[in-house]
Amino acid sequence: MKPLSHQAVSIELAQNRLRLWLLDTALATENLSVPGAYAVDGTARYAYPEAGGYALVWLADLSMRQPWRRPVLSSKATAIVAWLATLLRTGMPTRVTLGAEPEDWRNCVRFCFDIAVVLRGLVVARAMDLVDSAADSVAAEVNLMLADFITVGGELKTVAARSDHLSPPDRWSTRAGPFLAKPAAAILQASAFVPVSEALIASAHVTLRQASSLPVASIHPENRHAALYAAEGLLIAGTLASETSWTEHATAITRHLAEVLNREGEFAQSNCGGGPQRSDVLAQWLRMARLLDIDPPLRAVTADRLAAVVRGDGSLPFDLSDDDGGTSTWCALFAEQALSLCDTTELRRECIACLV
Figure 1 (cartoon, rainbow, N blue to C red):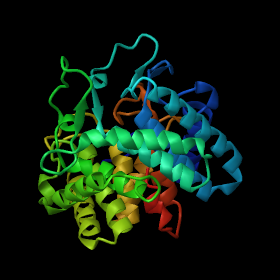
Figure 2: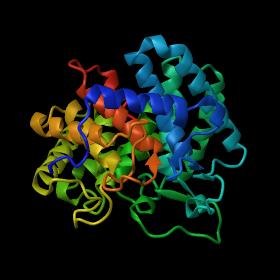
Figure 3: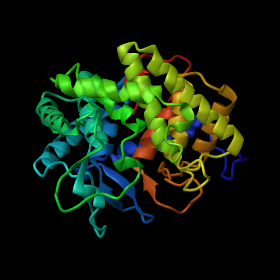
């Protein structure tokens, strides 16, 4: 990996900064929503239900790591559940624009990925007793929304139209692909807590089998963020279902990306060297490498690299190469968890169940 261009800070300090920014800013109860990203001036650009699902899982994970925070974490999780309940009244938009932000094209469809992430967040927070029974009715409604995402071939469908007159652009997040292993894993995990249909569970299994059968180099070579979603889903589902072929494929994907990182020195968004140097991708790989015990020397360098770009206020830029750019809530959630995993000597099984 390339030498650091930022001043080195300790893993512990970076982790503390991220955690405080998340708790005091991104997940501040008075927000009445979970912002997905912030502009350069620090104003929230849009609220993001998917980030709300991630936040619920992160709060559950943090409650295990720091149980003395449970009252505060429970309050924040309860506020997120209440916000998600209000969004259901308008069909759960993909993104809720704030301020002067233009209407987002993503709102012309529903995404299987986003809805499954929200469902998983609700059931994980409920399983950890971080929220009360009010989450159950929200989870039940979100679960019903997933019925729209079963294809004729039996695998999960990527998007479902909200309107006959609008269609999304052609990109990785709107096409079928192995990244759908992560919502498939979310569906299997949720099925232990809510009555997920047999057809949806079967679709999740088909999707996971398809992802685990693909050659590693062919798994989203155009987008490493998506490739790591595939690895995360296979690891979560493989651990849950004791399916070793899925966990082995997750390991192979992570090892392949370690080779890329060693060879190229950075994670560009695509294998063609294009796109931003994304902080979420770095954090995703670091989490997987720690959980699967892959390349400890590279993990150490990667953790230092990630810690060094955490800003003094605890926010984290989306693009590692843009010191003055906007920041991202989900990047910070991924990064705090990644650095915490690197800072612990013993891994619990729950670390995978609560992988954000």
